[in-house]
Length: 109
Image (cartoon, rainbow, N blue to C red; front, side, top):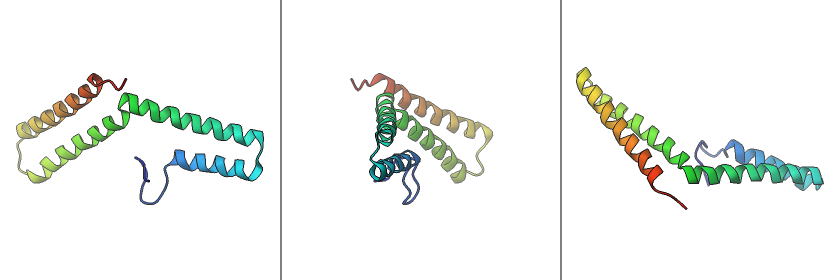
């Protein structure tokens, strides 16, 4: 299962670090390696909970979509005036802001 930020068949850095810690614990079966694996897993779980509660991943997706929409407009309208470009950018930024605002309004708890 690919996570945000992963490319192709590569696993994300956080998952790779966890897998390395797991491999170390499986090979050594020491208390220290188990503590390291536990700490890394706790950080990953805390980060995931934080992102879900704050909508951090969604904000990044909305930001990317905003930029892509502006780029698409520019590509489809190469002769657009500065006023038209400014209007499109303003429109897309307002859409982005409204979507982020909606995240703040919708509580998960």
